[in-house]
Length: 435
Image (cartoon, rainbow, N blue to C red):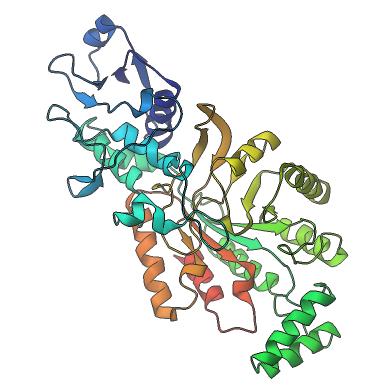
């Protein structure tokens, strides 16, 4: 057991200690403020504070974890054995920076609570992030820090720790509209038809008309192609392998409006398709764009009425999460797991980790029951590349995840599998499953 001397145990410290030691390293620990207990402990121990007690293993604290609310902290980047680091410690510290405060800063998305420049969809831009500006967006930095901390400071065997984990590959598919033309309504189809004509895409215009009069399949009618891939691999490999690939479909069940123009949740065909897919893989709810608290409750009820099971897996439309507002809505609905933490336009680790973590509400200074599954790659970031270029991007991110024995989650839009476009999405999906 690891003993931590920390007389001022705040909610922030409890949260980050529990996440790093119990969830990531899967080791037992205790925190004490009693000096005699700390001195008498014969096992692994260290103190955490603004100054050491004596000659013990000591980790310096910069004070972030003793604060309440949001304060503007100056970030001065440095290094720890070739790893980027910040919150630099004074000379007397066995780690040259406050590893606990830095991990807390990144995993709670502390920087996203400040005023920010958003992208065209109103999302936090990766280019505003500390990770992008300091060239560690492609690194699961918290996981790398803790791996090094465990080996150097705690003298733990990371191989044994990794053997206790069951890392997963997850393919998450966001379904904004289940059909490209059919069941989309007159206005949407008129807009698409005119756009095809203006761009001289006459072949697509003809296909659209044929689809609408049921002379050919809708270009988005590819769910079985996708399911066949994962079903075939499951049975080809050991069916009891804990590390097999998972797939989660996130379906849109919101009201029709200017932002949400997909197939209506009232469509019998759509409902039957969701039920059919739910027989083979996990299904979740894709919340509408610009959703309100009323929308969240309404769409949650629709999902549960449709699939006859509690809502567990969710994601925000186009990963549009505003910290902490969207997650607070999910906490109120008792939703358990969310897959929106990532960037649609840049590969990498938005929260600097590839392991799930619980949402910490900085407004109320409390850990919530909402479990966040961060994704590290969205197909959108490489859709315009050649197949070989996509494989390079895929392998690069996957290598970073494998280095820390983490979860590899890749997001797709359902439209990426559109039969009318030249896409390698299905081949990339297959290579993820086969790896």
